[in-house]
Image (cartoon, rainbow, N blue to C red; front, side):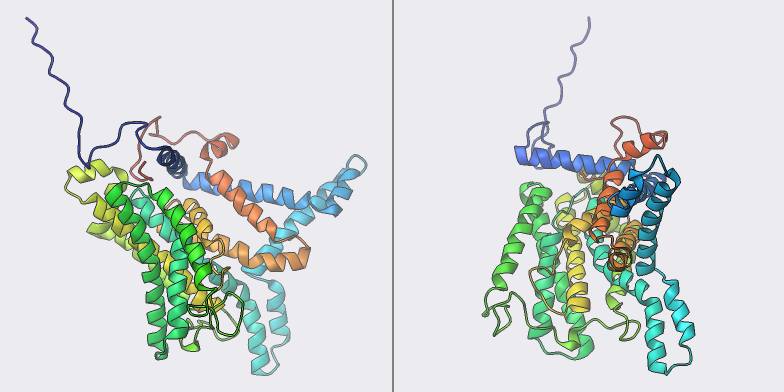
Amino acid sequence: MTPPSPAPPAPETGPSAAPPPGADGGGDGKAARFQDLLRQAVQENTVTVTVLALLSAAVLGGLLTAFTSNAVLHAWSGFFSAPGNAIAKAWSVAAGTYVALFEGSVFNPHTVAALFQQASLPTAIHDGYLSAVFNPLSETAVQATPLILAGLAVALPYQAGLFNIGGQSQFIGGAIMSAWLGYAVSLPFFVHVAVCVAGGFAGGAALGWLAGEIKARTGAHEVIVTIMLNYVMQYFLAYVLSSQSLMQQPGTSNSITLPIASDAHLPLLAGTHLRVNAGFLIALACAFAVWWLLNRTTTGFEFRSVGANASASRVAGMNVERNWALVMLIGGGLAGLAASSVILGTDFTLNPQSYGTYGIDAITVALLGLGRPGGVVAAGLLFGALHAGSPGMQTATGTPVQIVQVIQALIVLFVAAPPLVRATFRLSAARGRGAGTSMSKGWNA
């Protein structure tokens, strides 16, 4: 006689139970699907695919630059009568744009030639020519500093399965604290700088912790929470800058704070002629600290374990909710440090434009860097170079600076679509990645 089949186990209940498919609300469902797309984009990207994505973006950017030039369009109107001239003209415009970008962000040989020609001039003038040689690298480092820190603010929570899209709110929180401590508090030089930087970290960390704590306690999706916090902090900043009893500079109707005290400026690293400052060193130190945290500490192991499988981590005895709150706190603090590098390093005041697009650029940098600290540094330097070289590019070639934004958008397009790159270059799919295979890293839907 066949024994009866055992009854299926009762469905798990309690806070550790995973919700059934489709049980989440409309907003959470859309956020989870968006999150899953980003996770797949990161998982399917390899170094080869990323390099080919950058190459594809550069080629398309060059074509767009060439064929939006009146001179090129005029040459191509007579393509059948002079094809060589049309192709040469398009190549000249595209190559000239990238050469100007390189000269404005890395190295300009004309400044080196001028330096040697003026070698016999007085020391002060000679130092000015010497500074001109290193100015492109200095500007690249300045532009890359907040991008690296904001990118780390996205990349670190990603390791714990969270998508921190609240870089803007955390940046604003850090900017408010850094600016207020910079002009309202009087301290000795080194102490004042340290206090302002710490205040920036604390301001961003508070916003990050709030998003993480809400998720830990209520299960609210971090994408929705952080997006809403972006709006909250954007309007809060507008409010505090519109009242002279709060942060608006007295005697003016402009939405701007008092200037930051000179004692609170980040120290310059290469003299007064170059803008590169200690913020760049802070960014590199934070990238190393994030790498060390993830790969050399128990806390980092828990972050990665929770990111790989929150349910299994909970069964293993890890406090998943505590890790969510902690990793968002640290991520928010990194975004706050990005604000400190801008307020204390280059702007020396706070206004409604101070936060710029750093919150959005942070997602791009983290995506291009594959969520790894070293990759984030490389991606931040690349985007910093594009930003630093664009003004000189416009001056030298007449190409509008907006082409840099187009190139960035193309980079994101190709990096976020690995199957497109693989199909274009006829690459085989990564081995061991069958359909439905889950990877050890990713945003945990």
